[in-house]
Image (cartoon, rainbow, N blue to C red; front, side):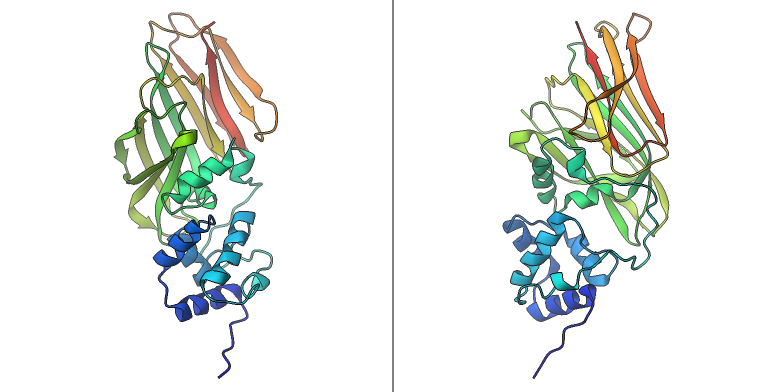
Length: 302
């Protein structure tokens, strides 16, 4: 008997998965073992036609899928063309950039995310329309904690989680989530050699495409963080971004400034430099309509 494969990628993938008898969990595990991680949710989106692989890491995973599912080479990859909107996905206006254009050592980010069954593509969803990130630096000049508030908008129906990645200067013990609102921590994993930390948060309720939600969480860093900067990445245009550093009033830096870097290979652009005195223990860097890139605050004690 001759079996005809569907002519579209999502249908062909769904049929191949059904014939293999493998669960999405097992397929995701085997992809991780081949160093081509794809989360269970991403596999579900692919087979249901809500999203399709288009980045280099995802295309490599599709080739691995063909082997795992017992398909001839290029059975699935040959069906991939330009990305087409499927399902209830919201429009993503404006320029976007990939994670490896804003993260130094992006391979360590991918390794950390793989440990929570996620890929770098998922850092960009749900869409972060607004972010307010506040850091606290202790009396020894060490980053002590951070507080993050986000206004998010779901890109697809059934959005149930979001990811947060940060990199410590050292990882002598795991960081801890101190509080949450609108979400709860579900998993934490780290790429220990690079001190890259990946957090998974579950939303209090599933979101439909286009639905808004506010979430907030706090993180306490391991003792003795020696970085002299704090930064975050924006992958697609947003409405506003607020970065704030609160220093111990008895141990203020001499200088502090905001900065922007469009890509990790480009020079840093300083924004709003100030000299501190006893009356000023907090520095804010506020950007309206931020374009994709790195935003941060750096300080010095000399």
